[in-house]
Image (cartoon, rainbow, N blue to C red; front, side, top):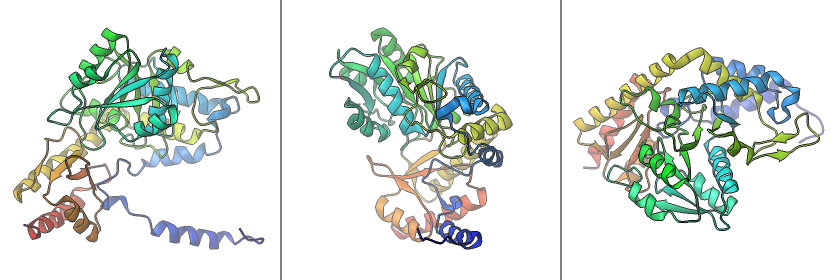
Length: 377
């Protein structure tokens, strides 16, 4: 930083240059985030100075946060849940497992997750010193309940199900995990960071949320398919005692207890989530998901015309295509300006069809993908 500051115009020009280097979402098929809804952006700006870490100074933002949690809970089967707005799925998963560990009685705690669990659980192993045991997947890339059960022992403090896996968009058999959790009196966390704003609006019904008696906590991210600004995650507990396992005394603030992982927290994202959820309502999200699923079905249809098939029929707006030499195809598509990703095992091309994708742009992508795939055969 220089002694003398620059003019506002000069700084804004610099910012414009940096912004121009960022990738436009309309060519991105790898991300689970998207453009925020305009009303979310406006609400975010209105509450930019609000700090939910010192909630007594911002009672309006604090009340909005409670209303967002209630709306999330209502969408996921229980409007009476307890929780707070996090920075995203990673923080929510960390805090859920921290609560499970803290209310457990083991000196050597472990949790059981699936092989397809998000990499945040690897961070959890390091941060919380909890052993993370990874259960096998079935033939359609869901966790195998028998493998989960085989990994459970007296030191298991939690089992984890995924509702909308990052790689395959699959929904684990949460009902079976719920039955297991109830029978064994084990904490069950459901990571629905992506799926929370998709699964309730699909044509097919899935049992995955607080309607199941064994579900103890859930992760749900408004900044993904919820169309909120970044970073906005949601951590939800059925039982308030689990939230209380996270308390820290804060005697020099206007509130004497925090439950969050971070101290200072943005009230702006709580306002953004409140605004877009109130504005769109369930019908608005249903329309958004219908748009994404229509395009998802188009990917499968068009790819099949040039001999490329999905590894599984898409459950939600995530398509995994068997394109042969995945690495080379992805590189060739990148050279054409498209941003895609790959799965780990088996290796395949992964596409996430988010609300920013238009029919026209998707057809352009599919034209390029057809040409690349034909060149490789």
